[in-house]
Length: 165
Image (cartoon, rainbow, N blue to C red; front, side):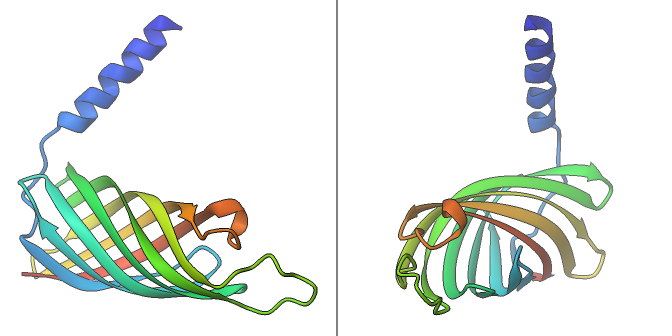
């Protein structure tokens, strides 16, 4: 058991310290998708260092049960997989405003402001032209005002299309 833990720790340490290609100074585009409906976000990424960046998203979510506007911010670490393929992970959070669909005999859903913490894990392809495509998932855990969501948890999957400059 201790050997397995040691090997896991060493593998994670090596994975976190592998070199990555340089990332774009700025990207701007769209992040499209959601786990149980449709969502669209205007997405901006700004490099902070050679292998780190901040991502900010402003968007709208439409699901079977609610409509929401969201603002999120994430700090990401970027690592090279092979050539122009990268993988990345990050942490952050955000806030938003939600309006639930009316459900008869249900007073549990309260419209209003919500705050959440988020993680992020994805892969991206950096084209030779100024185009960046990504596929990621972002689990979100409600901190405040998330009562009407599925047990305070949302699992967001999205495709990102961004212009690099």
